Amino acid sequence: MSGGIFYEIAKRNVRIHLLRSSLAMLGIIIGVVAIASMGILGNSLVLTVSDSLKTVGDSVIVTPHVGGNTRGFGGGGGGATSLTLSEQDFLQIKRVSAPNVAIPVLQSSDRMQLGVGSDEIVATIYGLNPDDVPELLKLKEGGYSRGNSGCLVGSKFADDHNVKVGSRILIGTDGNKGTLRVTGIIEERGMAFDVSTDSAVVATKDWFDAAYNRNDFDKVVVKVKKLEDLPIVKSAIEKQMNKRDTVVDVMDTRKTMDTIFQAFGQITTFVSAIGGISMLVAGVSILNIMMMSVTERIKEIGIMRSIGAQRKEVMAMFLYEAAILGIIGSIIGGVMSLLGGYAISTLMLQNTKYLFVPSSMIHIVYGMTFGITICLICGIYPAWRAANLNPIDALRHE
Image 1 (cartoon, rainbow, N blue to C red):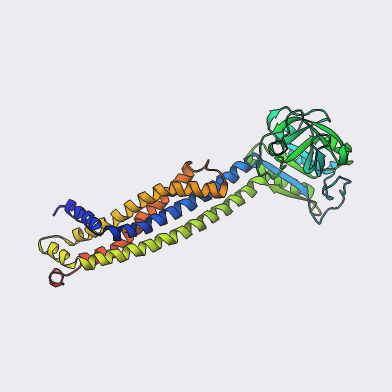
Image 2 (image 1 turned 135 degrees about the horizontal axis):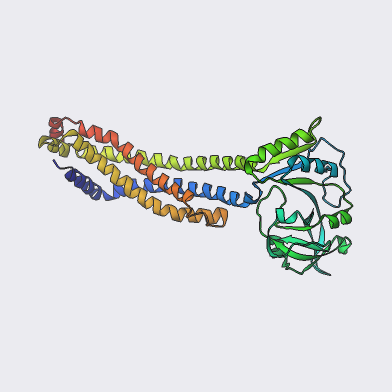
């Protein structure tokens, strides 16, 4: 007998029991949407973090070891850390990390006014050598400051406080530490391990030294030219600085990023597995419906076998039915996954820029493939049972 006949019979049976078939497909749809949406969310989260950290993936960051070396107590202003790196420490780090660029960073927080008579706010202030700033920061508008009276501000700081190029900022209570003119606005950097400038002010090192009476550093950022050299530079700094005691902590940002992404990957797998549970429940529903279909059609199967239908053809008929349920349910689920991914990305991440990238779309393919596979697997036993019914007993069945 022609295989097309058994496919048409399978389609007819789905149509006859449309409500039952629709409920079975609903389980598959929910499973596909759950798996794909969770996968899209996880991938979007990884890409969002990756995009935020891409500017610091080439850095080695050196900070004083907390609880260890105490030789660098500084007299910095409000918020400055008491454990610091000396000029000698910086020179050693610079020497062992050459030819890579070592950038000393001063950091504090202070009160400031955005104009005479305005309300005071508190923000982070960084002190950097003017020559080092282009290596570390890119500008959204304006220019880099060279003189001690100029400064840069982060893009979020500028947006939140309506600061523009040319604005003046009074630092300290009533401007007692001086006035800085904004010469440029820094591009948004997002999360950063080195300097978090989005809501900060960046002044020159000389101005910072004079304002806070500082001659030491809070950290040193080494920008490594070749990513494969990151572990080598990190090891060289640790070997040089921590000969006898642990004086500094050295962080390889790329390794830290890999750890973060691995954790996000595990979270994505976990939430997708939760979605997979709903797919398994749908598979049980498919198995139950197929078993009911076999029971209802025992006499029909007996007639088919008596007029020459082979076991493999009867088995194929029921597998066709399972495949129809799986394919239609998975296609509808795949389409709805786009809406689910859009909704969950908007709700959790407040953006959908990573929704249509290939690494997100592949999760829809995974969900649909899993849905079809589950349906076929759950259809195997009922199909086998139907194919192995005794034709004579089947004809006698009432």
